[in-house]
Image 1 (tube, rainbow, N blue to C red):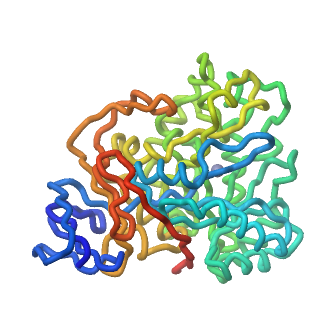
Image 2 (cartoon, protein in one colour):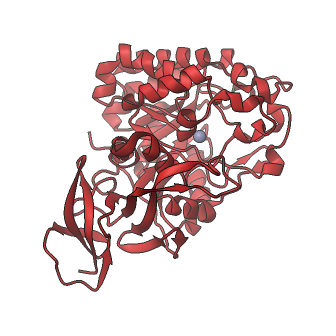
Length: 431
Ligand SMILES: [Zn+2]
């Protein structure tokens, strides 16, 4: 064995067991109570031993208009590694034609060559001219069983319309491809250039999310399609699906994703002087919606971060039209959410995204045959986050990531990145 991670509490199917994990050639070989001979031994000292986290919603090196987000694939994946994220999924640039797919993939893969952790991509479309089936097939050939679209941003020609969404959902199950949707009602979102930060929430109201999600859920039910809604922001959106689409949520034909910031912050921040630092789309919601999304946390299968920070100098403006949207979060997503919800949050960072996006059981679980991606988490201590660049600065959290392994190589020790190199993960939905 190359590596033994011993004396930990190993997370398997929702329970913790006192076991040792042995890794050989980057793959988990044996999980046992015995101590086996190995080249290297890591003493987990009674800490939680968790599968490496998966963040299926990040934007590294994203250019929006004149601005590019602060983290490239190298720095962003280091931030992720420090937060226990050993695999992430980024997005290809939007395409309209199948013929644009290859170049879109080549461009992003080139940028991602500096990644220190494993990664994949979602195909992104913008009101395509080619057929749904052809677009999906192009991705499947390269190990991409997910197509992302926006129901809004018609002003920049990024909106994909209902008839096309319908045709995607219609073939999604047969072709084994997940349809990933940014859901806001285009006609209920205000896009004029004079909206002030303090009005950000009202300019993209909860009703714009709820009505769009309701329509998508109804389409998915009608077509028995595989739907995934990204960054659900409002508790009432989750409640609506919980009460009316329970069967689809249970059998995972409809999957909901949300981000830590919708659980941890409310729209009162937009009234404050530095409210611009908290701008993203959809926006933070009123306290009653924040409370409600916490209450309905169980219905959310995946926590993604939508990680997309910009330099403070770029964000500092009064009007939302002048602010590049997005916040950072990949480093603190697990620890902040674990603080709120305890071990119940673990599957939403591991098995949930792995299954939703066709990486299970290679990723998202600790069993023989899986990649040796492991997070050592000390859940017994309370620490205060010290990171002036982060919206989580000075937040007190329960637990600390003590070590991170990617395919059997330790890449993080005690909050320090040690070095590492990731690879492209070809995915396939297992249904
Ligand atoms: Zn996003």
